[in-house]
Length: 114
Length: 110
Image (tube, rainbow over all chains, first blue to last red; front, side):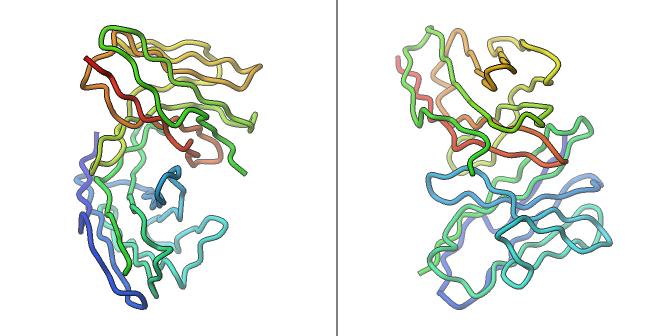
C-alpha cells in the first residue's frame, strides 16, 4: 500500500489569496487524483493528474481556479486560486493502488476561507 | 445528479450487534464497488470491495452484499465494536474514476 503525505493539514486563508497543497507519495504512481469534500457532502473528484501531461478536470472544475502540477511520479500540487468562503472544504489527494480501484488517500487539507 | 446515494446520514448501534449500512446507485455501468471508513482529521481508508460479477464478499467482521437488479449494496459489520465508530462512504468505480456517496456516520455505543 502507498503512504501519502499531504501538506498542510489545515489552513485559514484570506479571501482573494491562493493556497497550494502538496501531495507526496512514497512510491511511483501513474495517476494521482484530487478531491474536494464540502461540509456534509461526498468526495467530489476535481481532476486527475498524470505525470508529463495536462491534468484532466471534471465538469464544474477549471484549470484557472484549480491549477495542478505533476512534475514527477511521486509528487503533485493543487492550488486553489482566488479564494472565496465557498472554497472552504477538505481537499484530498489520492493515488491508485496496484489493485485498482482500491485507492489510497492522504490525510486531507482542511481549508477555511475568511 | 447524485449517482451514488447513502440515504441514512447516521446510524447508532449497540456494541456486539450488527451494523448495516446501505448504498444505492443509478449508473448500471459501474463495475466495482467499495467501502471506505473515515475518522476525523484523517483521509478515507479502504475497507472492502466487491466486483459487479459477485453478490457477496466477506473479510472478517465485514461483509458487503451487492444486489445488481436493485442497484443496491450494503455493508454488514458484525459484531460491531466501538472502534468502528466513523463515517462510512460507499464508492462506485466506472470510467477509471470513483464516485462517492455522502457518507453514513456510524456510532457504536457501549
